[in-house]
Amino acid sequence: MGLEAAVRAYSQAYLGGQGSVAYGLLSQRCQFRVSAAEMDGLTAAARAQYGPQPITTLTVDTFAGTLARVSYVYPDAAINQREEPWAFENGAWHQDDC
Image (cartoon, rainbow, N blue to C red; front, side, top):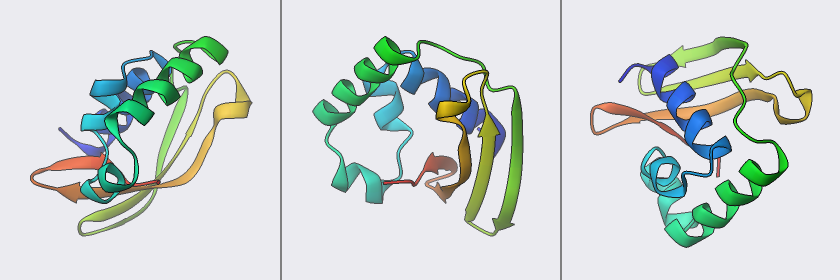
């Protein structure tokens, strides 16, 4: 999965209350810091507060080998992400903001 597809998949899972899917898209470093149960709670809260929202604009700010920073915008500006870190591990991109 490419970087943009991974960002969109993570966003959809996170805001859609799909904790196990979102957890699987975290970097190994983040999975050590956040448990699957914690992710279930975080995604349930995000779904209740914001609900599923489409990313309207996505920009890759920096890209250097196995690391990238991505900014993306939603209809609700309260959840916009700026220069969110992503790491390429085990052949796929993973969210690394923990």
